[in-house]
Length: 292
Ligand SMILES: Nc1ncnc2c1ncn2[C@@H]1O[C@H](COP(=O)(O)OP(=O)(O)OP(=O)(O)O)[C@@H](O)[C@H]1O
Ligand SMILES: [Mg+2]
Image (cartoon, rainbow, N blue to C red):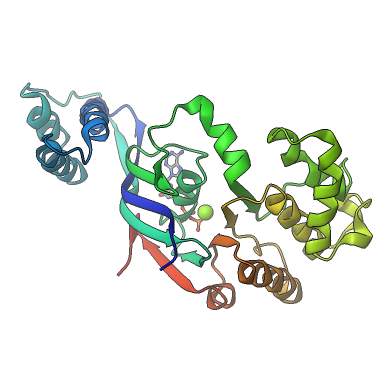
């Protein structure tokens, strides 16, 4: 059995849009209790099971839009919804549990607005969940200080986006060298590692081209080279073939499959069933939850 590389425990992301004071206050109390839960979580002799139950109940009330009840349940204090309390609560992620093993290639699918990008942003440590836990190689990263996250992100995680996000004024090799700067790789090493990465994606002969001198598929291969150059534990792709035609999609996915065969873990959000078919597992998200 391969080691667990990414594990999610009851992950939630709640957006409160507008000025819904009762919901905001209830959410604050829920987060407070969640902090306490994180502190004592799974320690023997602590009352963490009880806290977990309380948390579940408060969250259940909250998701049923009973914000006042949720607040009162946690604080034993009353609260009233004022006339000017207007807004909406979006449960972008509504209790996601997942376990992804090292070496997997996972597709994340689901209708528009179901929470895929939100999930990917949480997994990629680009945004923080409201409650719940994320374990990267068994380490709880949700309790890590914000100031340490960029370092984890740049050394452990790689990203490939739909619109490539290459810097237009830099050549392919300069683009690929950028993450090495952020991970503080010695300058002497950077060029060699970037050349190696570009070689792996089959673009040794395009190193000194700028993005506008490359095809869509080639641009995405440069972006993949950039994502692998730090040898990350996981590479995330959000619609990485979204702007490519069928032929280029095949070319880019062939590369992803080859890298996966060499052991690279991938988590890919896609609307394309052909892309999902190439993945070992498909996770479907509906209304912020993993569909059975
Ligand atoms: N910053 C935000 N504030 C409020 N609501 C948000 C915010 N970001 C996302 N949402 C809401 O959260 C839900 C999930 O959005 P998300 O972008 O994760 O969907 P998605 O599955 O990636 O959709 P698509 O396939 O269209 O890219 C949507 O209902 C969206 O409106
Ligand atoms: Mg999206």
